[in-house]
Amino acid sequence: MPLVRVDIKQNPAPHFARHIGEQVYAAMRSTINVPEHDNFQILAEHDGEHFIFDPQYLGIQRTDQLVIIQITLNEGRTLEQKKALYQTIAQNLNTQLGIRLEDVFINLVEVKKENWSFGNGIAQYAS
Image (cartoon, rainbow, N blue to C red; front, side, top):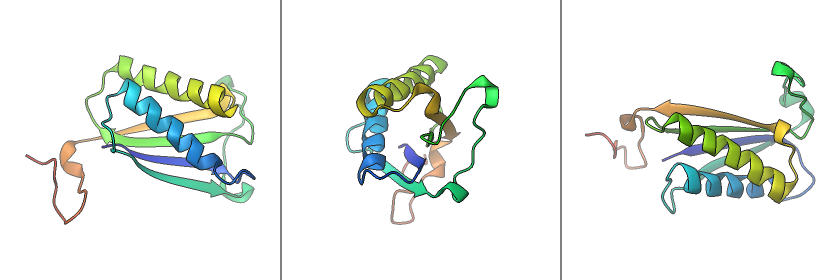
């Protein structure tokens, strides 16, 4: 059960953020075994005053087209799966939406399974 947050600067294309989310979901399905219909996303666009980043941290040259993706998911994926996820997301966003590889920032937040409630006040994954 990943929860995906995508943050970008305001984009004139009305469905741009949604298209980013679609590519992220496709990458999760193909690299970290996310099941069909397990798609929960928060897509947010910000003005320049509320979207702050360093344009050259770690020697990576970022532009105003930066996409910040945070994925909260159950712990347990291998390092190889995570690397494949990062690369697949970046490549998909580049080839499908023209986003520069340098402008794809991804953060994974791993949690224990009991840290989810999908509704009804029940911890469905807790044993």
